[in-house]
Each structure stands twice: as structure tokens, then as C-alpha cells.
Image 1 (cartoon, helix red, strand yellow):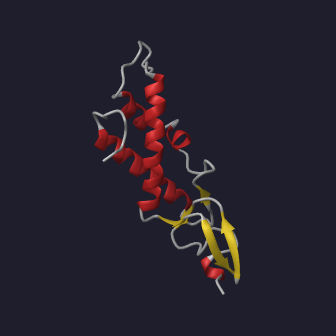
Image 2 (cartoon, one colour):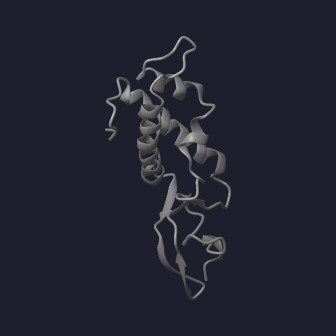
Image 3 (cartoon, rainbow, N blue to C red):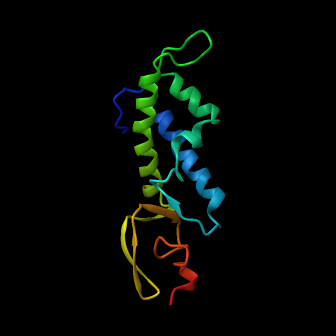
Amino acid sequence: MLKTTKKLINEQEVIWILKEIVEKSYEEIKDEEVLLCLECADVDLEIATSNHFEFQEAIKKNFELDKFGEILDYDGYRQLMYELYDYFIELHISSGFFDFFPEGEYEVEGEMILSDSDIIAPKGKFYAPFEHALLNNKS
């Protein structure tokens, strides 16, 4: 269930599309040693959906459109995208495709290091949210 101010007439369709985007994102980077900062726009709903026709059409079903097919309530659209972003981040964390490293202290190679951001990485690549904290290099 989405927590949005606007009641979506096609909530399950939007959820399904967002889950599909998360899975596709994982498939694209699953073999990479990449860390994604959740506060740094590494995982960004606007970027992920800007050219995603199916998502854009699903969102438009919830708004009145002008004669060119553009959403009239731009502020309502911005609010919805902001609220969907929170769900998009949660999908990444709960998907099972990514390891989640919340901000905090981590021991890496015997040294305590502070991460000031929430980080995700493809499952099983890192033991802490730092480039040199690769699982295959763990001492």
C-alpha cells in the first residue's frame, strides 16, 4: 500500500512498474562493485522514470490532462513524485537484491570508519559501505 496524499486509481499498476524498475536496475549492476548513496541521487525516481513511457502513462491516469496530454496539476504531480520516491527507496532496501548499509560506524580492515549516508550495493559485494570493503577482500 502506497502512502500518498493523492489516492491512485491504479495503485497496483504503479507498484508493479516500480518493482520492475528496481529489478531491472539490479540486473544492470548485479555484477558490478558499486555503492549507491540514497541521499546523493544515486537512486533517483525522476531519473529512473523520466523516459519510462509505461510509468508516465500510469501516473497520468491519476490526473486531469490538457489537450496535449500533459498533467494540469503540476504541484499535485510533484507532491506525488516526492511521495513515490520514499516508496522507491524502500523498494530497493526491501527487494532482496541489495544490501543496505545505514549511516553509522563500520569496521573496515580493523579501522572504524563513519558513513554519513545510507548506502545500498548489489547483494553480497560489500561488508561495509566503502569501496575497499569488498567481501572477497575481507581479512
